[in-house]
Length: 353
Image (cartoon, rainbow, N blue to C red):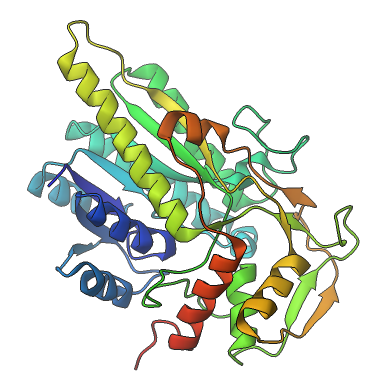
């Protein structure tokens, strides 16, 4: 077994898929989650899929005492930090909640990590830190600016990590900037299970397909794009999970080279890396692909553009390929197939009562 990793927010959509990838790569994991926008059922299913129980602690990242107990009980190599609120609309309505949870919670986590000598962190950042991009594809040197409190909370944490790396050279802090995670585990056992009306496009499409929702609202059909609808970089969640394993392997490689070298190398400091497919797909192209793959017709109607939405956003993933030896492998067809398998097997998501 490799090193032990604390996974905050490990019961969530990306966290649960990453737990499987970490286990398959030989890592020992402890999941810490307050279940505010996730389900314990996801952890139960991950345990079934990997064939062994996962150590789970119900706790909040803002609760320093709870975190201290977890760190005192384990020897962690590092932390993968998913825990955070993530709905753009809700962040506009409740900015204090988002800053309290996403920013203050991360500060508390970092303070507890420091007090226990754990200084390796992989942070779940977001392409929203780029705001409305000036050029495409977006690389890590692109200007950062945000159009909503959710994105601003992610960018604020990035600034905190940058300052921390400057203040103390023993930290290794990787910020993985995700583009648009979609899809589900090929088993159909775990997937995206949003509360209420989905905020993201793919679960909205699949819930229309399964009959939970009447039709899809497409916000804006007058963008300067291939068909007037917004263009995004959709990345399969299992590819994304592998990106976290690659980042962890990279951190391990750096720490091993430190141990084995005569002259101690500095830690990597703050390192931002995009995780995306590098390709743009429009909303209508995704709807069309889903219909072709599943045979399900998706009724839709156009609505006005939403405030803060941008025309096009897709990644340059060259840095991930060069440093982490990672690239997205799964196609939009795979995304549609796996999403539909999850949705049709679990029409009510994790709500199995």
